[in-house]
Length: 114
Image 1 (cartoon, rainbow, N blue to C red):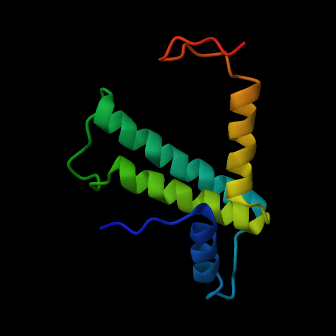
Image 2 (image 1 turned 45 degrees about the horizontal axis):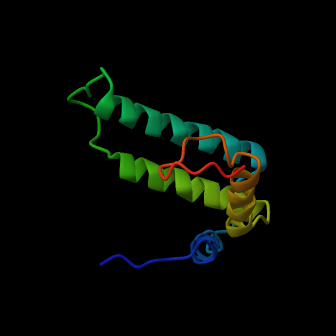
């Protein structure tokens, strides 16, 4: 059974983990490098799973779920280091999608919200 966590709880859990170490969070530029690295690993895994590039026998068995988890961890570290609430960031983007982009896509119910 999986324990459901809010974004705030996830951010606190990561902060508690990082807080155990003298080094603390990486610098913003190092964090961007880590984000890019993890995104590349996710892309590679998606390509292995859905694309035309099978894994070599010497490559580690990793999953899309695992790579998304790594990416979420680094995004959470970056948000914490920047003192950004991921919940607030999420709410802002959902507001933007529900206002600016409300008629951008074809709705399943066929309703036009203009």
